[in-house]
Length: 552
Image (cartoon, rainbow, N blue to C red; front, side, top):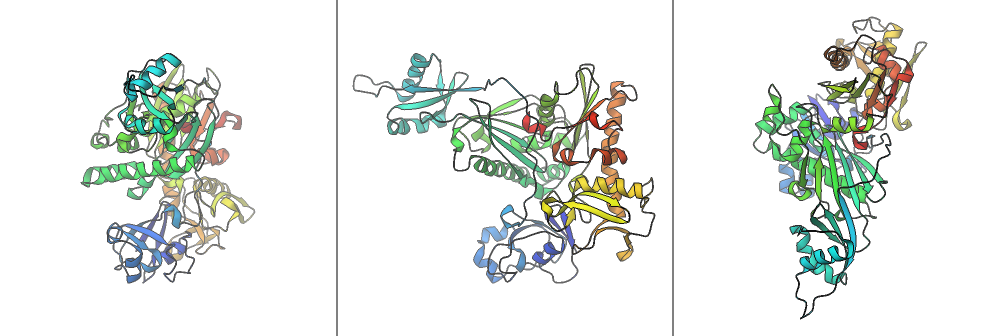
């Protein structure tokens, strides 16, 4: 039986009556279990999203409500799988946190937000002055700040009357266009929110809109991942399951709201966020907004909308200022989304001018643009989750214990793990190193076939290149793993070749490659060139920009 653990992307196999806690440990996944698996601490909560398991025990029935049990919530130490299963491990149950890329290039811009804030002092109403509270705010705003407002947001209006009296008629009016969207206490900070909703991860930034300073930056896993690592699987769930689209939207909105709370911490309040900008690939964009995705799954893959969308945050359940808007940047096409637009906003002008350049954002869905002679050509590549550890026998995402760098020195494999922890698996950056090192050492041939007997294991007749025997089970790369990596690599390199042909660029014309995303930031460029993933250019031709979509 196969057990898939999300959001780690790791997989375990079991034949007998083994609890999900033990299965997770065998896969090198840390699930909290202070009591040692005796069922007394309640720290090993998981949710079984697919598959059949043993019935809930009396202990689980005391911990979970009937609704929670019906939704799949279980204790890993008490649950034994009876079939192939997919298991979601919530962050609070994991003992190691995944590394999530939030850093990006820093770009100097003029501060010119879509919202402004003005401090005003109102005259209290009297029997001779019966002006309504909203009219009083708009009048004071006009006379004291010269700002003309014609309306007050309904949700802000519901709070204003009581609040104005508590604040002794001193307040801060937040205005967008000719609408007062929030009425806050005097001297409140004016905050902005930027969110990059990735297929796998969500990166968020809290911004001081008066100075442009990034106050905090955080990242979380996209909770939608339990419905599928790739976008097509999630869209299929949205289309084929009656409640599927609503589930996917609810998951990502809950993830965003949790991220907002984390960004604000104890110092700020989410109600002080006056404006938000969000980006995502086209499919995640549609699923977040509750837009139909049927047409994205069939040629010619047309988005429901490509232009920028501005909506009230409350319309989709995002918890920020009462009347605050979210601006979703425009999409380009069915599989080239607003996140790539944001990436391009960041890097255009950052690189060498008048130089033919590639902009590559590697992920489950890799988007690539070629910038040449003032024009931009874009393509999307279904590269799959292999570079994030998915579908690999010992693959995992970037968490403590993941092998992230690898080199063969003599006849020994040397490696570095994230956090310096004991090895439990291998993440994307090290898989590229492994392919390059295996090829250079003659362990695999030009076609990717394993050709030598050492260092190999042939358990169950499957050739495996052993990376670490210290881990239990050992960390290995199988022949099937190599084929998965070749598919992902070929998808991306084919996309690059298509762009070169479509743009009419001459061979060797590309002089600069800009890499974005967590994988792009940690990749060894020399290894990527050695395996044919990226063009063979001098090291100085490559520029790593981190989460450029978030910066954009």
